[in-house]
Structure formats: structure tokens, C-alpha cells
Image (cartoon, rainbow, N blue to C red; front, side, top):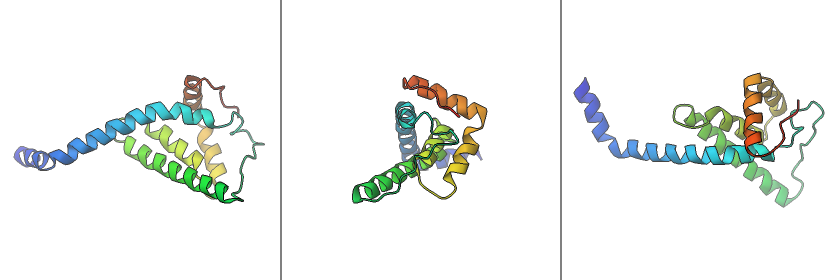
Length: 136
């Protein structure tokens, strides 16, 4: 059994090293970008009367929406990976969901933000970015 495990480790050594390097890069990027991205979200974003949704009416607006959705998808996927590797997995998933546009997004965001530990963590990270805390 131990011999088989050692054989697998030596067989996939290059792949394991690459996964470790990618994991370290994503970890550092998540530490640097998470407070900044949270700082971009308006303070009243989670209040009941917030209506900041805009539709892409121009080509530039469409490109911006595609970019935000792509970045959001990347953050969600990176967050899923960070659930099993070092990094801020849950926070990255939340940021990705906040950026993306999909049906019932608002209800999901409000449900997630009403979880007190999540709300406190997001506000702590906003404080690190020098931004005021979210209001509910």
C-alpha cells in the first residue's frame, strides 16, 4: 500500500508541484484583491431599498457586463479550489457571486449576507481596505 502511494507521488510529482505553485499564487492574489474588491461594493448594497442594477444599453456596457461575469466566474471557481487549498474560499465565492448577473441573485445575496459571521467578516475585510462597513 505504501509502495503504491509512493509510486503515485513520484509519477505525478510535476503535477503536484504545479498545483502547489498555482495554489500559492491564487492564495496571495486572494489576500491582496479581496479587501480591494469588497471596497468597490457600495455601503448600502445590502439594504432593502438598494436598486443599483443597470442594464447594458451600449456596447461598452455590454463589454463591462461580460467582464464582470467572467471575473465573477473566475472568483467562484478559485473559491471552490480554495475550499480545499490555502486561501479565502468562501469570501472569494461570495465576491464572485456579487459580481455576476443571474436570476434570483438579489435573494441569494441577501440570504448569504444575513448570516452574521459572514457579515462580520465582510465588514472586517472592508475595514482593512479603509472603507466604511456595510449597512443592512
